[in-house]
Amino acid sequence: MVMIEPNVKAIGHDNKAWLAPRWLELSKTRDDFVQCVSSPEQSLPANVLKVITPTFRHALAVLNVAKAYVGTEGGLHHGAAATGTPAIVLFSEFISPEITGYPTMTNLRHAGKPCGNRLTCASCRKSMEAITVTEVVEALEKLWESPATQPRTAQQR
Image 1 (cartoon, one colour):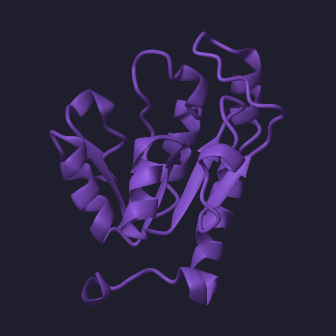
Image 2 (cartoon, rainbow, N blue to C red):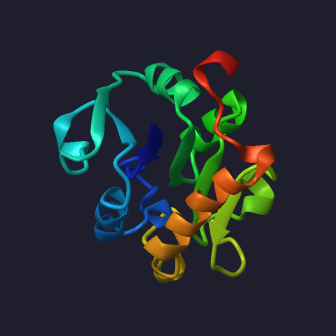
C-alpha cells in the first residue's frame, strides 16, 4: 500500500495544506492507497483503505510497512525518512525542502523564499495550487523506476 496523508495540523498549518479536491482526485488514481485516521471525518473516499491510528506512533507503524508515502511537509515525512519509506512530499512556500527536506525523497515545491507564516498566506496557497495531481502521480510512478527507491518488501523491513 501507498500511505497518503491529506491532513495537516488544525491550528497554524493551513499554509502547508494541498487542496482537498486534488487529494480526492489523487485518491482515485490508484487502488492501493491507505490513509491513517483517528476519526472518520478526516477520511478520503471509500476507495482508500482506512486504518485507525489513535497516535502518531501507530501511524508510524503503518508507514513502516508502506511501500511509499505521499503527503505534505510535516511529522509523517520525517517518519518516512526515519523508516526509510520512499516519499513524495508536497511543500508550500511555508518552508523549503532545503531546510526540512531529505535528498532521498521527491520534494515537490513551486515557490519562492520560505515565509514561515502561521497566518493564512496567499503565496503559500498559490504555491500549493501550482502542484498538480499529474505531477504527483508522475513522481510516484518514477519512484518505481529507480533501483535506489524500489519499494521494500515485507521481508526487507
